[in-house]
Image (cartoon, rainbow, N blue to C red):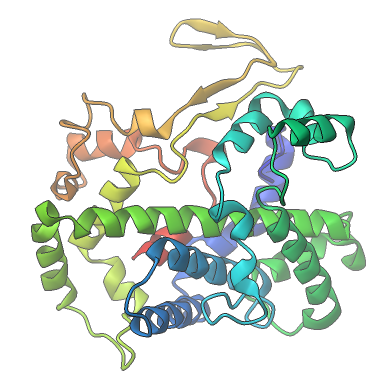
Length: 353
C-alpha cells in the first residue's frame, strides 16, 4: 500500500485493512489486552535493570505491539522477553545510520537498488569505496521476518484467530481466491511492522527525554496528578478508555508529535503521467514532478504555533472549538493528511498513551 502511486489502487488496498487501525477497533478488548500485555513486558524489563537504554527498549515495545497486531499473538515477536532471538530483528536499522540510505533510495532509486544488491557491479564498487554498508542493509532482517511470519501464518494460524491484520488481508491471497501472492502478503505485512515499530519508538524516546529535563519538572508533576484520577490494574497498567480521555496527557503527546515528528523530513507526492496538472499556491505542477512537505517545518509555523521551538503542552489545553485549536490541528502534519495520511494514527496514539 505504501508504495502504490495510483490513488485508486491505493484506496482499495487501504480499505482492506483500515478498520483494523480505527479507534473503535484499537479500543476493543482484544487489542487493549494486547497493548497492556506488551506494556507489562516493557515495565518488567525496566524494573529488572538498574539502568536502561530506553531507545532500544521502546523499539522492542513498538515491535512487539505492531507485529502481534499484524500476525496475532502466536507469531508476533517477543523481543521484550528476549525470546526466539527477536531482539535482533531491529539491529540493522537501530544499530547504525539509515538516513543516508533512505535519502538515496528516494532520490536515486535505481542506483541505490543496484548498489544495495550483492553481486551487482555497482554494489562491488560502492562497497569497496565504503559508500554502502558491508553488513545487512536497513530493514532487511525485518523483511525476512515478515516473509517467514507470513508463511508460518498461512501454514499454522489461518482460522485460529480473527483479530489480526493478517486475518483481514487473507481474503485477497491466492489461497482464498484472490490475486495476492505470498510475497504480496508478506510485503504488505512487513510495511506495517516496520512503520509501526520505528516511529512509535522514536516518538516515545523523545517524549521521555523531553519531560525528564529539569525545566520540565512541572510537566511531570501535572501528568502524575492527572494520572491519579484513573484506576490501574494489579500490574500497574491503566485501561485504555479512561487514559484516552486525559486532556493533559493528550496535550503532552500532541506536543511531542509536533516538536519531534517521527518522520520529520520531506514526504513526497507525485501526479501520475496521465493526470492533469494542478496548481499549488499559484504554481502549475505537471505530472511526474515530485512535490513534498516537511512535517518538521509545517509543525513549526510561527503564525499557527507561537514560539514554535518551545515544548509547551499547554498550547493544546484550549477549547477544541476555538479557531486557534482548529488551526493547530489542521497545520499539525506529523501523520500527514488526506488520503495518504498515516493509517496507524489511532493505533500509535493509543500506544503512546
